[in-house]
Image (cartoon, rainbow, N blue to C red):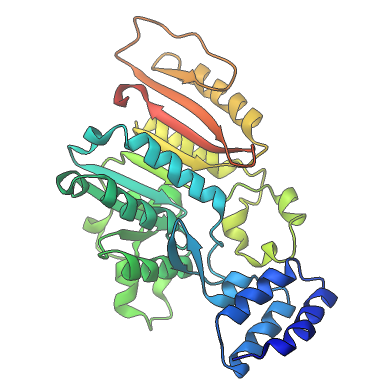
Length: 334
């Protein structure tokens, strides 16, 4: 156990290295009661501005403790608000689960969204309703999925299904890789090239889609703090304007008639999404109704068009009053 008499010396070193929130980070390390050797190793990592969460190896999210490492994003409060939004909707629509439903978490990372939904819906729903849900999580990163799988084994009954997939490739029998199959041959150096039985690819309808995709533009990424840049770049930015993956998710959701879409977005993306959805409205005007809610604009709706697709879109602000949560609902599910 590290003596408190050394506290001032440790704190001065952190401040000298311009480590943000030095006091709180040092407090976290001291609270772990590491042996002196382990503390010194972790303190050196902190001096090098490595994120505290990676040094600890875990972080709290929605009251649960999750494993984290440099392969995954660090859980943030904004994503807890995404969970709250989802639970608020379905606490009023419990009968929606009186039939088989599929929930998919795209870009799952450490699995915090799908695992928390699993745990919270299990509390919210009667057993007969909860057992109607299939939980699926995907990520393009194998290393991230191994972290998510580890968290699932720790916190759930291990019934969540994981796919290594670039967005919706897991629905294409020629492109997906199922993470459970990776684990059967963990020593294989060519895991990414293994072809699996095509019968195992996902072919059911997705009912609920949730995602915290990489939505930071490449220009904004360059201006992030150095500790944030130590998180996986592929999980932070799409390498372009921050909207390319968001648009793909919206497109897929509409054209595949997904009932609900919940997605975390950037604070500065409302106007771009408004414009994009307006273009979608024009493109699909012959086949569907697209209604904007809370965008300060309402597009023309045809009263005799009720047999066609109809979607409501809204954007909710987070606790800091920034645009953060994109919500899409198929009108006929409401």
